[in-house]
Image 1 (cartoon, one colour):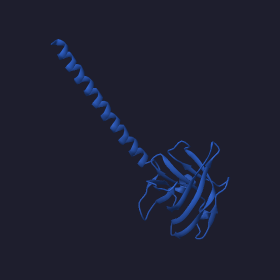
Image 2 (cartoon, rainbow, N blue to C red):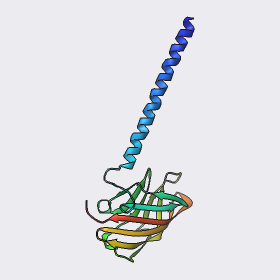
Image 3 (cartoon, rainbow, N blue to C red):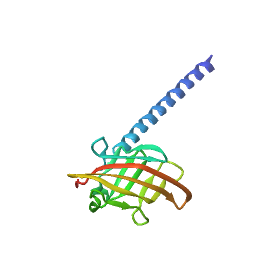
Image 4 (cartoon, rainbow, N blue to C red):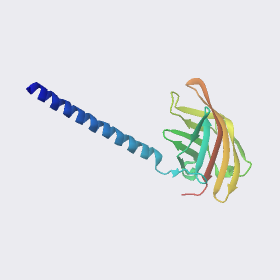
Amino acid sequence: MKFSILSTLLLFLLSSCNSQQTEARKQAEVVKNAIIQARPGTMATKEGSWTMTARIAGKKWTASAIMPPAAAGRIVGYYQEESIGLPYDIRYMVVGKIIKFHEGNAVDLMTNDDIGIWGGRKGEMEITKVEGDWAEGKFYFTGSTSRSTKTVEVTEGFFRISMKKF
Protein backbone atom coordinates (compact mmCIF):
# COMPACT_ATOMS: atom_id res chain seq x y z
CA MET A 1 0.00 0.00 0.00
CA LYS A 2 2.78 2.45 0.93
CA PHE A 3 4.56 1.52 -2.31
CA SER A 4 1.53 2.37 -4.44
CA ILE A 5 1.03 5.69 -2.63
CA LEU A 6 4.72 6.59 -3.06
CA SER A 7 4.64 5.48 -6.70
CA THR A 8 1.58 7.63 -7.35
CA LEU A 9 3.20 10.66 -5.68
CA LEU A 10 6.44 10.16 -7.60
CA LEU A 11 4.55 9.82 -10.88
CA PHE A 12 2.57 12.97 -10.09
CA LEU A 13 5.77 14.93 -9.31
CA LEU A 14 7.53 13.75 -12.46
CA SER A 15 4.58 14.61 -14.69
CA SER A 16 4.28 18.00 -12.99
CA CYS A 17 7.98 18.76 -13.60
CA ASN A 18 7.72 17.58 -17.19
CA SER A 19 4.73 19.84 -17.91
CA GLN A 20 6.60 22.81 -16.40
CA GLN A 21 9.61 22.06 -18.62
CA THR A 22 7.35 21.76 -21.65
CA GLU A 23 5.73 25.10 -20.79
CA ALA A 24 9.17 26.69 -20.31
CA ARG A 25 10.27 25.38 -23.72
CA LYS A 26 7.14 26.81 -25.33
CA GLN A 27 7.75 30.20 -23.71
CA ALA A 28 11.41 30.16 -24.81
CA GLU A 29 10.31 29.43 -28.38
CA VAL A 30 7.81 32.33 -28.29
CA VAL A 31 10.53 34.70 -27.02
CA LYS A 32 13.02 33.47 -29.64
CA ASN A 33 10.49 33.98 -32.44
CA ALA A 34 9.63 37.48 -31.16
CA ILE A 35 13.32 38.44 -31.17
CA ILE A 36 13.77 37.05 -34.68
CA GLN A 37 10.66 38.90 -35.90
CA ALA A 38 11.71 42.20 -34.32
CA ARG A 39 15.45 42.27 -34.92
CA PRO A 40 16.84 45.44 -33.36
CA GLY A 41 17.18 48.17 -35.97
CA THR A 42 15.03 46.47 -38.59
CA MET A 43 11.75 47.54 -40.15
CA ALA A 44 8.84 45.11 -40.30
CA THR A 45 7.82 44.31 -43.86
CA LYS A 46 4.40 44.87 -45.35
CA GLU A 47 3.02 45.23 -48.83
CA GLY A 48 3.53 48.72 -50.24
CA SER A 49 6.28 49.47 -47.73
CA TRP A 50 9.49 47.66 -46.78
CA THR A 51 9.43 44.44 -48.84
CA MET A 52 11.74 41.66 -50.01
CA THR A 53 10.61 38.48 -51.73
CA ALA A 54 12.32 35.79 -53.80
CA ARG A 55 12.30 32.15 -54.74
CA ILE A 56 15.15 30.21 -53.15
CA ALA A 57 15.66 26.87 -54.90
CA GLY A 58 12.11 27.25 -56.22
CA LYS A 59 10.51 27.89 -52.81
CA LYS A 60 8.77 31.18 -52.09
CA TRP A 61 10.65 33.30 -49.53
CA THR A 62 9.33 36.52 -47.97
CA ALA A 63 11.30 38.67 -45.55
CA SER A 64 9.57 39.57 -42.29
CA ALA A 65 12.01 42.43 -41.59
CA ILE A 66 14.54 44.57 -43.47
CA MET A 67 17.52 46.45 -42.10
CA PRO A 68 17.49 50.02 -43.45
CA PRO A 69 20.29 50.13 -46.05
CA ALA A 70 21.52 53.53 -44.85
CA ALA A 71 22.33 51.82 -41.51
CA ALA A 72 23.61 48.49 -42.85
CA GLY A 73 25.32 49.54 -46.07
CA ARG A 74 23.43 46.65 -47.70
CA ILE A 75 19.83 45.76 -48.50
CA VAL A 76 19.24 42.95 -46.00
CA GLY A 77 15.98 41.05 -45.66
CA TYR A 78 15.40 38.57 -42.83
CA TYR A 79 13.05 35.65 -42.39
CA GLN A 80 13.60 33.65 -39.21
CA GLU A 81 17.25 32.50 -39.36
CA GLU A 82 17.60 33.18 -43.10
CA SER A 83 18.62 36.36 -44.87
CA ILE A 84 19.48 37.88 -48.23
CA GLY A 85 21.97 40.76 -48.27
CA LEU A 86 22.27 42.72 -51.52
CA PRO A 87 24.99 45.27 -52.30
CA TYR A 88 23.84 48.85 -51.72
CA ASP A 89 25.10 52.24 -52.75
CA ILE A 90 22.71 55.18 -52.92
CA ARG A 91 24.25 55.99 -56.31
CA TYR A 92 22.77 52.67 -57.58
CA MET A 93 19.25 53.97 -56.98
CA VAL A 94 18.55 55.18 -60.52
CA VAL A 95 15.78 53.65 -62.64
CA GLY A 96 17.28 51.26 -65.18
CA LYS A 97 20.59 50.85 -63.32
CA ILE A 98 21.84 47.25 -63.50
CA ILE A 99 24.29 46.06 -60.86
CA LYS A 100 26.14 42.88 -61.78
CA PHE A 101 27.18 40.59 -58.94
CA HIS A 102 30.78 39.38 -58.84
CA GLU A 103 33.53 38.53 -56.35
CA GLY A 104 33.93 42.13 -55.17
CA ASN A 105 30.18 42.91 -55.19
CA ALA A 106 28.43 39.71 -54.10
CA VAL A 107 25.13 38.84 -52.45
CA ASP A 108 25.20 37.26 -48.99
CA LEU A 109 22.68 34.45 -48.59
CA MET A 110 22.15 32.75 -45.24
CA THR A 111 20.02 29.61 -45.33
CA ASN A 112 18.82 27.18 -42.72
CA ASP A 113 20.41 24.10 -44.33
CA ASP A 114 23.64 22.08 -44.32
CA ILE A 115 25.56 24.84 -46.17
CA GLY A 116 24.26 27.90 -44.30
CA ILE A 117 26.35 30.61 -45.98
CA TRP A 118 26.34 31.26 -49.72
CA GLY A 119 27.90 33.93 -51.92
CA GLY A 120 25.98 35.21 -54.93
CA ARG A 121 28.68 36.10 -57.46
CA LYS A 122 26.65 35.42 -60.62
CA GLY A 123 23.51 37.38 -61.31
CA GLU A 124 22.27 40.95 -61.20
CA MET A 125 20.00 43.49 -59.61
CA GLU A 126 18.05 46.10 -61.58
CA ILE A 127 16.51 49.26 -60.14
CA THR A 128 12.98 49.41 -61.51
CA LYS A 129 11.40 52.36 -59.68
CA VAL A 130 12.53 55.35 -57.64
CA GLU A 131 9.87 57.61 -56.18
CA GLY A 132 10.68 60.10 -53.42
CA ASP A 133 12.68 58.26 -50.73
CA TRP A 134 11.57 54.81 -51.94
CA ALA A 135 13.30 52.52 -54.43
CA GLU A 136 12.28 49.17 -55.91
CA GLY A 137 14.28 46.60 -57.77
CA LYS A 138 14.44 43.04 -58.93
CA PHE A 139 17.26 40.54 -58.63
CA TYR A 140 18.43 37.00 -59.29
CA PHE A 141 21.64 35.14 -58.55
CA THR A 142 23.33 31.78 -58.18
CA GLY A 143 24.68 31.11 -54.70
CA SER A 144 27.83 29.05 -54.30
CA THR A 145 30.33 28.22 -51.58
CA SER A 146 33.95 27.06 -51.45
CA ARG A 147 32.94 24.28 -49.02
CA SER A 148 30.77 22.41 -51.53
CA THR A 149 30.08 21.91 -55.21
CA LYS A 150 26.39 22.62 -54.56
CA THR A 151 24.76 25.78 -55.84
CA VAL A 152 21.42 27.42 -55.11
CA GLU A 153 19.34 29.47 -57.55
CA VAL A 154 17.59 32.57 -56.26
CA THR A 155 15.05 33.88 -58.76
CA GLU A 156 12.13 36.32 -58.93
CA GLY A 157 13.75 38.55 -56.31
CA PHE A 158 12.05 41.85 -55.51
CA PHE A 159 12.70 44.57 -52.93
CA ARG A 160 11.19 47.88 -51.90
CA ILE A 161 13.23 50.03 -49.53
CA SER A 162 13.37 53.51 -48.14
CA MET A 163 16.60 55.39 -48.78
CA LYS A 164 16.02 57.72 -45.81
CA LYS A 165 18.62 57.88 -43.09
CA PHE A 166 17.13 56.76 -39.79
